[in-house]
Image 1 (cartoon, each protein chain N blue to C red):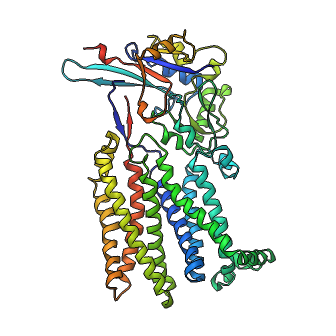
Image 2 (cartoon, one colour; image 1 turned 30 degrees about the vertical axis):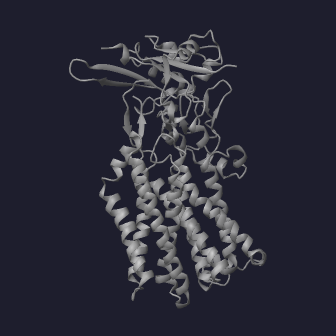
Image 3 (spheres, each protein chain N blue to C red; image 1 turned 90 degrees about the horizontal axis):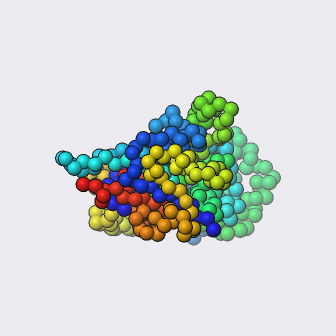
Length: 319
Length: 205
């Protein structure tokens, strides 16, 4: 078919979908990392409370973004039903919704015994009373007995959410920037990188426990590896887009000629934190400020990545 | 078996937009919004200097055999009938828009709560829609079931749109498609569309 093509971006899924992808990935990865830390490195009540809290709150924010933009809110009931798997096993949103729901459920259950030991939560008006219910005490006993089983259920669903955020975009075949296997990889790495940054921020500014030095150093090292991996994936995206189809090339033109992407995301969101954390790991810092700065920059970069990805997707229309 | 398909001849489309009007009234689409047509005729000038051609390019849902809109639909609202027509169940659709993002042919439109309210005013008691959803061409399934042609085909003054059964070797649509004269849009994406176009440019200039 000899046609003259038109190339267009879309205005249906914009910044709010970027927020959904960002908070979803960040919240789920934070929950998974804190639970794994608690299960295998060091039992850490504060970290689990922050991880589960962030998981639930961030996922709720992201889910509300999507829910608020639905055309028919009541019909969302169809996707909340776990049996949706049998009906639509090929739809990533169906998987993602179930991952989000069950991650929240297992996440709250895992954190419940710790919540009963947390003075701040016990002092809260409603939550404090709920924590003293007989049913809640019995659930806590059961969770304590099957702690790792519950923890792994939460972690598996959490990892599922992070991968899903990329698979969702990958399932749109018309856009070269999205429909490739690099996207789930990039979004998963980015989700865990932002989670590390978020946890470092919390540990340096809120928890401030001197005994956490080993965990913080481990998180810094992992984040360093994740940022490096993200840079390598972006490097391959650069050439995939630059030498790809017309849709890919136009996405390349949008991304790699934009200062927000080049300086904002790649510069301040990846390269600057990489060197700050590298210096921290190799020589150490006398102050926490550089790592806090690096964490804030990584968190900012995580959102910019998804924001630019949504706006730079190019459709090639044959008219 | 029946496998419905449409052939659009770009040589005979005169850009009268009667197909858009017929479709809108037949399917009660939001005519008050210029971006919400089930079928739309693009008007484009191609070429430079004295060799400029004006091309009218009708587009609609391609009723793909491998529809990405169906696979991404989380509730199962988008489904494919045995006769090849891709449909939307309005009651199941929550309007997430994933289908619109997945469609390479820009065939999806969003019907909002405001559109439903306006539709009740505009179309009166005959209005069939009760809830918002994503919307698209259905090849006028309700007409096809009665043995009629889609409204856009019926009304086309240039006979630019042909509708038929690909599985019937005697059907003109099946013959034109089999001859290779009519070809699908962007087959490399793997959607296996069932709307085919007869090119106009190679016969001009």
